[in-house]
Length: 323
Image 1 (cartoon, rainbow, N blue to C red):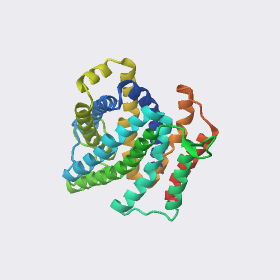
Image 2 (image 1 turned 90 degrees about the horizontal axis):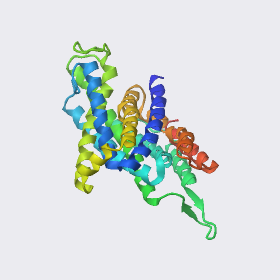
Image 3 (image 1 turned 30 degrees about the vertical axis):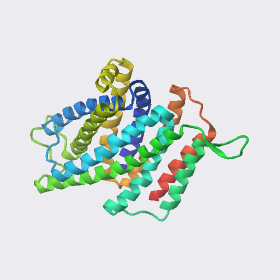
């Protein structure tokens, strides 16, 4: 029950961060925005670990832990978040989050391959239902030819699909890394209920370990975004300086960081420790439904009944993977 409750809180957190991220990424650009918010998150995570572990870096993590969590950061942050923010620019956060329902089947498939987690017989039906819900939201009939056409950018659709797939893959990789972290504690004769003697806050390791894992992932994220910014963005340093001078964009990056890499991602890792990857990812997928009303109000978007029904169907399809 704890894992399921945490997963719902993650969905709410991701809803808030998506709204902030749409504003910030449109003002800064996806690479600069991700670099700024990842820098902020590492500062907050270092402070958190200093208070809860006694050091501003992930204690007790072994080589396997670092390897899997860095790989998760590459897939989930560098590739996934770049695609997600780029998707927000092209199709907005509401449609961008709709495609994140693809993370549930991706997590289920990868959880089966890498961790031996069970997939229910309804999994294939769930895939069809999920894709049908997405199609219902983004396709409409052409008036003259009678065929179907996209109501949003086709490039945005491809990039958003990549974001959803990478989030699901990154979650499974992070769960593997998290399990290695707990194994590393056992190898050092430490219990996850232990409070580090140097900690300023008397919290057990099972509370602080997810934040430490997020910091490892975020380290890869920051390095990756800075490299991409330097290599593929003209005047990367100047672009970053300009972005930091935009107060509204920086405020949006801060809000996105608090509810995304800091709170949301850390709680998502904690949730996967208490429940299966698939159940957690299904509840995370509620975000496309939760975001409809605030996106319509804040961004003055016209929302059709068809789009709402499509989003609900897509989330229902993702849930069928784990019935």
